[in-house]
Amino acid sequence: MDAVQLSAIAGLILSLAFSYIPGLNTWFGALAATSKQLIMGGLIIVIAAVIFGLGCAGLAPSGVTVACTTAGAYGFIQIVIAALVANQSTYLITK
Image (cartoon, rainbow, N blue to C red; front, side):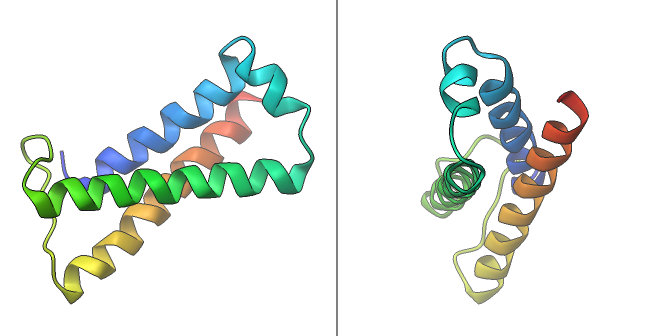
């Protein structure tokens, strides 16, 4: 599993958590659409940053490698996009 796949799985889990965990789904559902977008987008950026940071520090799970170079920064963008796509497609399918 590479960093992009890991971020996609994290985005999927994040979407399911905010849709189905009791209490969390009620709180999140009561928010305005803009607030929901900002929270979800912010969490996805945090997830991507954690994956990138762990990869750079050599602490990522086996098989997840991230280069701490300019190319690695482009990889960070791929990580964010993969998490966003998985998150939003899961949300649309499960709602």
